[in-house]
Structure formats: C-alpha cells, structure tokens
Amino acid sequence: MAQRIKDDAKAWQQKVRPANSNTRISWGGQVPKPKAAPVQTGAADNLGLNSERLRAHMVQRVRQLGITNEQVLGALAQIPRHQFVDQAFASRAYENDALPIGYGQTISQPWVVARMLAALCEAGVSQRVLEVGTGCGYQAAVMSRLFGQVFTVERVRPLYDLARSRIQALRLSNVQCHFGDGMLGWASKAPFDGIVVAAAGAAIPQTLLDQLTVGGKLIAPEGDKVQRLVMVTRSSVNRWERVPLEAVRFVPLKPGTQV
Ligand code: SAH
Image 1: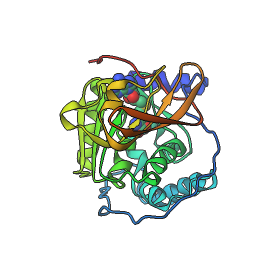
Image 2: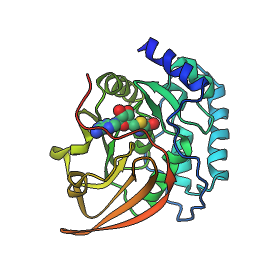
Image 3: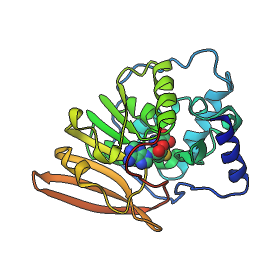
C-alpha cells in the first residue's frame, strides 16, 4: 500500500492524474437542518487543531464555486478529510483537489462531492442512500451527516478494509460498508431513495436503476472520454427520467472485484 501511494504521489507530481471535474456551477436551493450528532474526530489526528480552520477555508472555497446548500456545507465542515488520505497528502487535504488514495484511485474533489450530494438533498432524498465506489470512505462519511442510512460498496479489497476502519474509528454508525461489485448495487439492502455513483461507466447499469424506490433519484457520471453528471428519477416502476448536468472527470467504473 505504502509503495502504491508513493508511486501515485510521483505520478501526481508529474500531473498524470485522473482528476475530477473543477467545473463551476451555480446551485440554489433550500436550507434544511443538519440531522446527526457532531463527529468525534479524536485527539490523534495528524493536523491537530489546525484542521478545523483549514476545513472552514475549504468549505468557503466550495461555497465560492457555487454550492449554497448549507446542509451540505455543514457536513463538509464536520468531516476531517485529512484523516481519509495518506499522511504524505495530509497537508493538501483541504485544497479543492482530488488526491491519490492508492490502487490508481482518487479521493473526489470536495466540490464534486458537494455538487452530487446537494443535488440529492435538494431533490428531497433524505433516508436510505447507496454509494457505489467507497474509495477512502470520505464521501460516505459526509453522507452520514446528511442521510438517515448510508450503504456503500467498494470493489478493491484493501480500499474497502481501510475505509471501513476509518468509518468505524469516527463512529459513523449509520454507515454500512460492503466489499463487492457496486455495478450490481446491494440487492439485500435495496430499494434506495438515493444512489450516488463515484466512478464513471459508459452507461448507468440498469441493476442500479432497478434498486431505486419509485420517486428515488440517482446521480452518476456517465461517459467514456467525455463524461457528464446525470440525474435520473425513477418516476414509475418502468420509467426513469434523465437530466444531464455538467461535464466532469471521474475514475472508471469497473466490473468485478480486486483483492
Ligand atoms: N467516494 C470516494 C471516491 C472514490 S474514487 C471518495 O470519497 O472520494 C471511485 C472508487 O470507485 C474507487 O475506489 C474504485 O475502486 C471504485 N469503483 C469503481 N468501480 C466500482 C464498482 N463496480 N463497484 C464498487 N466500487 C467501484
């Protein structure tokens, strides 16, 4: 793992990066109240007392980039993002950037996390939400502050193990992690009011669309070289309505698992 992170860091410096989008948007909407109790970050975090101030800066930046949903901004302010990246990147954890997390994957850019979660919140999603692509666990942790129950699936075993231990250490008890192919969703926990996909496939898998409740919403990047966020609403048992949103750049959605 350590060597992979170093290799990733080198590629990063050479700017060979699967960066997430930094598209700017303006996004208005209501201001619902946060639901959950404060996160216990613990005394042993590696940026110490500075992390709160840095986090406030990051939230301010995301706000400047057009995210106005106070519930989402409040959730970003609560989660210690530096605890979800390798120590080599901790000092950069509060920049509005994607960063390597090993295995050729990245932690999503804060703006893109905020964009997708604001879209779900503003569409009225609040209860059972599935994330495909746990990665380091950061987005799932942010989701735990916004939704009643969070289910998250990761296909790379070491990433799954690490994310699960981080989520447990933060005592985010409304998050359940699963190791498996998220293109198949999580059938035993379905249906979901919301689904957020953190990796891009050529098309959104029908299996995921089938695991939405009627009225449920899915947000996912779609496309190969050119990707676009798409919001899909299941408007009846056999009908899904798609709204294309802005261009983005995500790591690929892949079938199967990697141990
Ligand atoms: N949610 C993360 C983003 C991780 S990057 C965050 O908080 O920053 C996308 C992740 O999706 C990678 O970890 C990758 O391994 C995972 N992934 C890709 N295809 C997948 C699939 N079919 N099932 C589950 N996870 C998948």
